[in-house]
Length: 366
Image 1 (cartoon, rainbow, N blue to C red):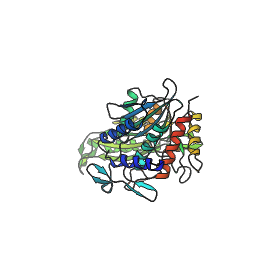
Image 2 (image 1 turned 120 degrees about the vertical axis):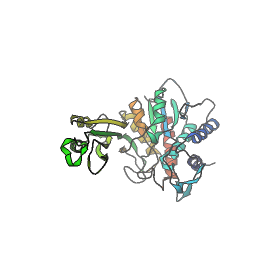
Image 3 (image 1 turned 60 degrees about the vertical axis):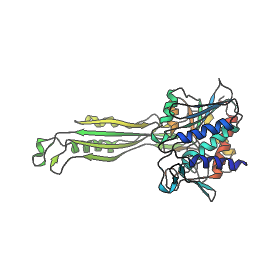
Image 4 (image 1 turned 120 degrees about the horizontal axis):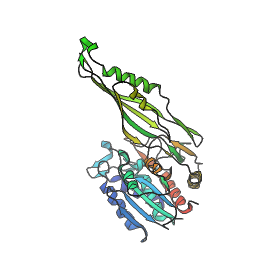
């Protein structure tokens, strides 16, 4: 089997296996493939939530991990062939199907690189579950002691500096989703002064949010700027009743080491603020590692990759928060993930496979 067919075939196999609300079958396939293809000295484990983790090379020194996830978002009807198979199509040098870009193509490239590489130190391959629902697998692995020194996370970084170039993301935003709850006292609308209008209190809180200055940091010569946006509001029970409760949803895109001071809304009487989800941002502080990955990506393609920043949260955020130096480098292009026409370039899959292998064989952490 030639090199190009290998990455195509493995991606096809992975993408065809449904893994939206149950990742078990995709994890089974990955585990069985690794046991068949990896060297005898490779240690392969499947943890309690279904993460697939393999290790080889010299233990005791610096550890490099190639990281991905094998869960996907809900497929469109056109991406489902049957109850137990997703559709995968190849045309015009691309593979189409749910998970091709996000991110089973990168998982296939990383798995192949892991098997092929003669690593400079300890090399780890990890494919997590539950990335699309808040990093369930990554968080579990970290809690169980998954602490690589360095990681290349295969989320999309292609087409950021220029079309077709696979760059290296050295930072990305996080996401904090929260709810502002305003409570008041109900009254008949004809006697509004007898009550306390929760919607008015909520709109006062919204005014506070609108006046907040989103935090920003400089990374890799680019300004990574957060945002704070009110996205939903719900309150009231009837046209003629002063509302006693109103809830406002806030979407905040966070940057490393900074958060917008949303707690200020609690200075308003009757208003409380709760955090519902907090996906951490990521920033690589080891420039030597970031440059080593960029050089590997440069050697694997004709274009010149750059160090860039990424707007979306990934499992790199959880790893970074736990102390791992991370970069993001993968085949997906902006706008491909989660779409009904999701696809990935076959040439870029092979490029990423080569990049991962080069990093694994060249990086020692010294």
